[in-house]
Image (cartoon, rainbow, N blue to C red):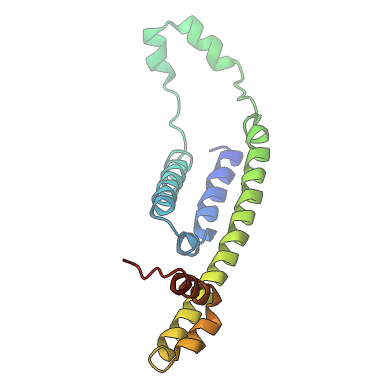
Amino acid sequence: MSGSVKKIADVTFKAGKTIDWEGMANLLVSDEARKEFSNLRRAFDDVNSQLQTKFSQEPEPINWGYYRKGIGSRLVDMYKERPTTIPKFVDMVTPQYKPKFDALLVELKEAEQKSLKESERLEKEVADVQELKKKLSTMTAEEYFEKHPELKKKFDDEIQNDYWGY
């Protein structure tokens, strides 16, 4: 097996071991995100498996006799004597998608910050509701209206306008 192909297979295998799939899965909040993440992990595992099986094996030696019978010895000998060089792979795709990926990472960080702020706000709101729930049985109307002046104004307006809800 060529050294570079073996290196690629080894690197992808090691990369698969170092990815914290469970940690990333715990950060997902929607069912759609979990589904997409599951698809991504399955695709990664499929590609990694193919790399491990296809490129970790030595290629079978060429059976020149078989090709001599089917094609003819002159053409087969020409290919057998000619040195075979495999062109070096030039990645033309990654440069196109790298800026898009980087932009998505920035967008992800912004969404993460927004989500953290909203989570913090909701936690505070839950704490306020729990505190109110504890005090509600002993709280007077005046104490409640101190915390919610908009409701006091609404009730005062209804009483003043003689609107009693029916």
